[in-house]
Image (cartoon, one colour):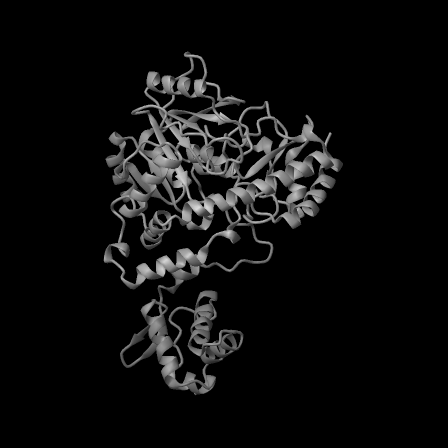
Length: 490
């Protein structure tokens, strides 16, 4: 028997495109109810009749009716049939029809901290391409080697690698890291002091949350990494931007308010590239002890130094330094691995691991175990040596391009022949934000130096990454960038 409700459902059913018939019917009936075509208390067609009208099996219709009844759209009355529920009006209120030209919905109510962070959000929407800074060449990573190790471990998988991590990372990885850091970076630590994190941002957030109260003060470098500033903003921690020179951060006079945290990149200042001198390191350690502050040493890419001896860590300069050392595999291996680490002072290790376990519920334990073998078997050190040579060639090529097409005065003054990016110094008054926007629109992913400053006294320049662009592509890409610079530079 045909019915008005059946005709309404049939028309809506014909407009659905899902290949699964039961999903088409479900979506059709839902839309009819929510749009008001099937009003509350409307009697639904009997399942046998509706199946006949739509050329469906009765089981399909019954399956959809059962789902709609479970979700409260329809209800069955004994000996009376099936009806659209009266309470469906609540759903209609939640899904109002929007007339064309209707006023837009109100903005969501976000916290003041969130709004401030959104106003300073700086993460690039694209993370691979010519001149993007801070991204390694992921194509040269020995993925097959790591996968073979991981597959071997998976064949005799330990249950503890598949559950929640309550120890701050796999012990084998912490042991391998302790050995590596003592040898390669001069870090003084035991495996018990190491906490494995999902990259540097999680590590920075952890130490900020656990060591600062809202309203506390921190020192950051000027210019400095935008990620640190946003983590401080979202945690309601105030910060003072402390200038850097060719010797690193210049600690303020004793009258400056004591910070809870001091964030530095001593081995390769980000973004300018200077190396903190020994005298400045000792001065900073003295000030930290004097003010009972913690120094957060971000050692993000110190493995890639192309001349001279490696720069030892600030953490290992003296016994029992007030330094929290943070590192990552994002630059040495690849960013999507999402693995970093923190070397904690002994008195902080237990509480911060407990907080990390409660807040973040660490994981990736199988890949951690595989990475531990990757390090112990020498693949990690071999990969770093190979990439250091590759990046050195690419950096030298970029330097030659800058000298030949723009002139040596465009080279940043703090260059330390290290890292994964260079500073291209622009003439004073140049709008580096506009130049970067135009370059980004053409697929040249440079970043404006001025965006890394807090105070008004900003230098104009571009961050040029050289790690993730092949040599045979670099000249053509740089020539396009030079064209944009010449049109816009003062």
